[in-house]
Length: 340
Image (cartoon, rainbow, N blue to C red; front, side, top):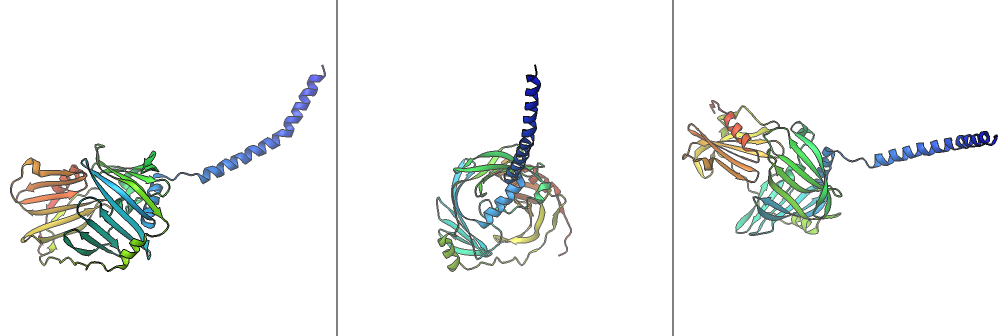
């Protein structure tokens, strides 16, 4: 009869003995879990995009990629490095006639089979993924939502997909795939407001090095073709047109009137709009021949050429934007008096 209370006492004592130790273990486990969680924090979508930008601009790499446009595949190569703290990029098409370019120190040299080589002054990166690699993603939050879609494999690399979702109908959305190891971009899908894939760039081979490709260094040391200075037209003046509407995020970077090189007797008003990812060109000239419906709209992947005739004028809008954007831009054009 007295054995039961004694067993209870022993068990109680044992529990009192083990409780402090078990609690200590529990607290230590919580600290360890918190530490591990802190070490494995996953970047947000915008942080991944910013890491991708840094990798694109600072790493030494070589990519072979395909441009998929209207069921046509175009293979291309890009070799990138940093020489004397400046980015250098060599680009070439891999099929057909030789077409190459070298961008370094604020200049781009072009080499094309059958034509003399030449150099232009430009600091604007014109190579693959350059638009998404130089975009201001913080500023872009007003026009895009950034969402992580998931993980997969591109060119044999474990990758993460991030979607840039347009907040309006006047721009495209994008899906960017980044290598989880190097953070370099591996694929870019351009998607219409109707969620139709319009264009795709995809890497099929990626090589990364701790050192700049020696051949790339040699290219920067060799004499480059003479710089061609584009002559400004003597008839250039302020445009007689303005637009009273712009898609959110776009700004007018150029607006003038000049004569075309092919026909200096025809003045053309020209506007260029830019949102950091794409630019749109608007040409306004005197009316030419009447157009049929098929000639008013031409699509080439994500690029649209929309033409509309208004009275005695003809307006052409060219850019990587939806047709709705081009049409509204034409309607927003206003003629202004210009005494210059």
